[in-house]
Length: 250
Image 1 (tube, helix red, strand yellow):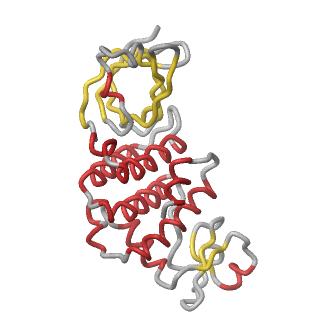
Image 2: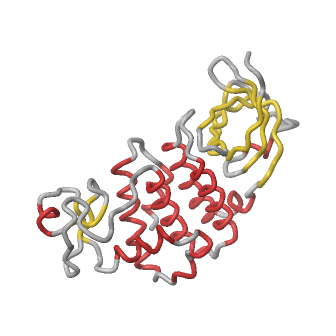
Image 3: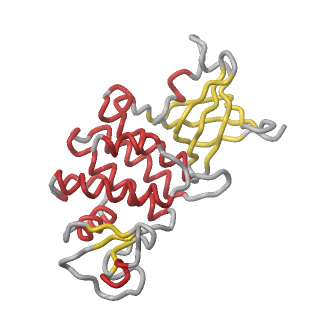
């Protein structure tokens, strides 16, 4: 048994284990994924209880186990209760947790991811409901950029040539806009609105708290969400049920 250690982490998902335990999937502050057992967490008088609910941030004491870490202490930092009590916020926050669950890796640090995740959840908790799709879209495009998939939006992602402003195409495989020559041979290229590159660039550059101030019309955000969602699905090799459900409702 190794030495116990402390970590601040975001709870992404929980799975039942045995009669009273839980396996909790966590995103640590350094961006690494941790899977840990919370013994007795499903009991009525558990000292963990709501401290390990999805979307909550907690300071934890972990002890190394044979295959999974063991949670021995948990102290709430941010509960994000509002994200679990409102249906629209729950759907939006579930996309965040689902994405992070699929892209984070054990012992593979990416410190920016944790800050992005917690900031996004903070913004979702206080945003107007109608603004949540814009926040989800901004989170996904920023998250993909941190995974090495920042969209190329100023010139052709394949040959670097200028693109046709009257026939704009976005290649899922190349990860950005493409010229007519390259797009014609790319089965993953999608026709998009002429202003879509500008919208995506604004979302990837803006702070999460400033997304609402961009004033992007709702129909344009819906189109951007569907495009970014398709981009995520194309490059992330795992099905994300929460994202699929959110896109169906867009």
